[in-house]
Length: 86
Image (cartoon, rainbow, N blue to C red; front, side, top):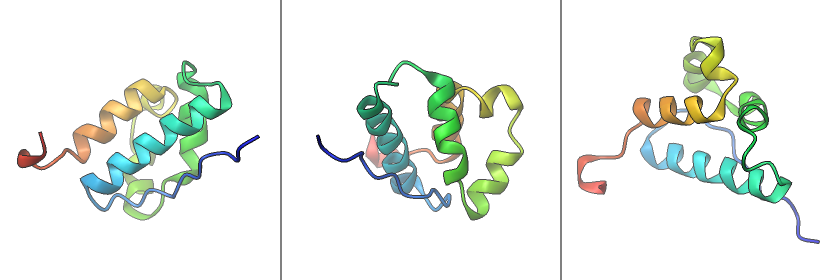
C-alpha cells in the first residue's frame, strides 16, 4: 500500500502555494476515500493553516470553515492566479 500524499502547511504566500495546497488536499482526500466529504476535507485542512493564512482562516464564517467546497472557493478568491496564468 502506498503512503498517504503529504500536505504542506499553508502560509498564504501566493497563488502557487494556494494551488499546491488545494491540489494536495484533494489528493489526500482521494487517497483516504473522502473525495466527496466536504466536512472531512475542511477538518483535515484546518490545522494546516499557518501565519497569515491562519489569521485569514480564523476570520471566515463558520459555515465556510466547515465545508471544503466553500473553503476552496474562498481560498481561490483570496489567492487568485495571476492574469497570465489562465
